[in-house]
Length: 190
Image (cartoon, rainbow, N blue to C red; front, side, top):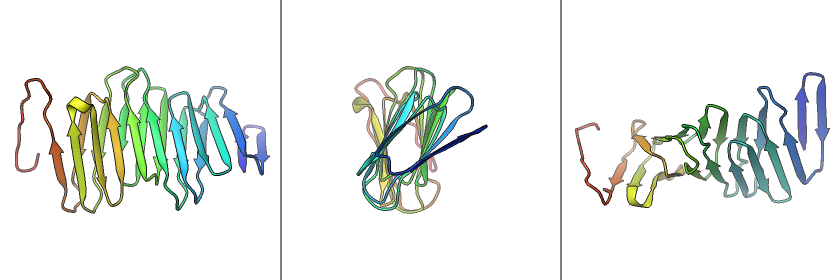
């Protein structure tokens, strides 16, 4: 089902397999909900599409998109940046990718892949789970990822990456150097 509500507007659609909603300016918000089966999210600053068994829903031109994966299934999200400076925030509970003109918030996805290949100076920030997590960074392959029993979140092509292991567990970080000249600064807690 789908519901579109606003000032003087309340539309309901049931038993629809393909839905497209277009924002028309303002501070529009799209809330998309997955199913108990496998769901896939593909989102960029201009639109977000959530699809699964028997349905596809697309939100076009909504500056804020909230996506909630359903219980069960293997849910995968792919997020693309804008041409501006964007921030990708990765936690065990949710991920967000946003910039000056958009925000995509996604919860409960089994895998998240964020890409910063459209310009700007982009930052990825990772925070661990309370359990055991691993963080891996390979600059020559242009990717970083944090993963464990509760998450698998990966970011590619981000200029700056920050990783925090502050929530507990026995965490491991593996950071590889680039082909150029690199400097490593290591302290007890950083």
